[in-house]
Length: 135
Image (cartoon, one colour):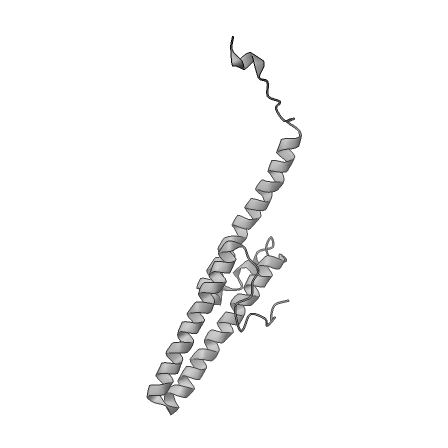
């Protein structure tokens, strides 16, 4: 007596499975296409505009959110270097220390933004992320 003949498994209908699989694969595909844009913009903030050039991603709220965060980080970098030049001329040794602290802070902001983008989160970067430039 074999157990195979006693146990029968029902297989799902063929019509229901592909529809669900297609929507999941489409969502995964769109997330995979957005992820590189989101991450590279934090690593190289001057490239924040790249996802805004593509017709597929230009109007996506996730892409616009990360582009805005990246633009803010780029503005903070510019402000730090402007402040660096002013402080460096006034107070050479103290200015150098302050600028190094600000550079570390910018790198931390970039790392936080990169991590959030990689995880697919829409979290603002600390201190400066609440500003909206791109709407």
